Image (cartoon, rainbow, N blue to C red; front, top):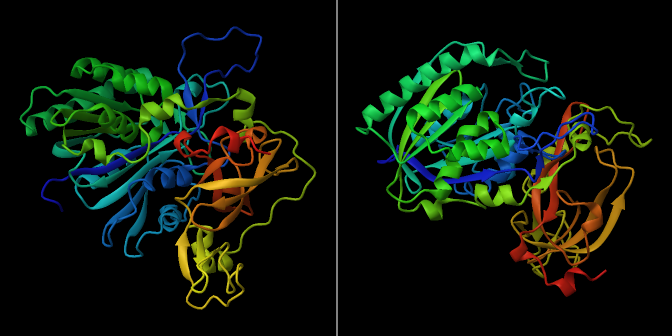
Length: 470
């Protein structure tokens, strides 16, 4: 355990889409000023969002530390989903991958990170029945944390457990059941206040510079913010993202660290099935500790999503697809043998000519020399430039069409990949793309994960005259 337990690095991931209107009848008047929710793409789940958050901060996770995936929406019921995350990140086999389940798992994962024994991703995909009162108040997101003290130092923590029927779901059910929030709010407020006051007392503090409150009950969250003197910055983020389940305490903490100054103190309180309170002092290296874009920047970059498209993505609207057979399910032996390519997007660099072959093979695709001595090279963090585009109108994905591109990777290698997070008609030759880990499809209860391409940040895109070339 480090001398100063705390957070050494962090990252947040918000999907590219936002839903602000869930009217089943579009002729009904829109609700002005209502909440909005982040929406994971049709090819995203807790695993892919965890990879996207962790890839910014977890590359150097040492052997002996645990990799935790905290979620209530794991893509597998009994298989360890954190193992897929571990493989996609290319971590040392000595890093133990574990799943944490349940609504309190986010706070528990943060606790283990702050104790210096784990690197953790908190990720959730929240789905309600169509038209549910809190449909726009739920959202999808992920956050990742690495233990240390560069971003923040832990001053104190306290917990309070309350057995409470608040949100629950039976095996095989898809949507959470929710008890009347007026009943559970009072219990969660009492538990949260007890944990917060004991943590502040342990830290010898009467007040802090910033109060961050996450709760599965919105009434409890509002009451706790008011009682503890919160400024409401966390509520503003929540109104834009929705309550993101297990990810929510991590997401709100990441947003607070984005804006915090060194030396300031933060009270993070999670009031879900009890209370978990953490008192942190912001470190001098907080600015360098963030991986990837800030929460504010990601909120500003989201695309508006129509309600019908959202329902199709979630499988809540049964729409006739193309008359095309389902994609074949991947098999376990080749997935294991080709793990370097499938999960880590590793090509092979020829020892003779230095060119990169993708997928890796026994013979170099450039010079034809047998691949003895060829070295694996990861392409997942490199920029790729589109050289040709086509559109698939018979896709088995819940979209009317998808773009497929051939792209040359900076530094060597060529990828043939699906494009995501952009309209197919907007994909053009010359565009800069970056790889993202996504779910291609699910067949025979097997999720087929691989890497797609999405538009790179603006600073990585080529000039207009290049991008417009067809």
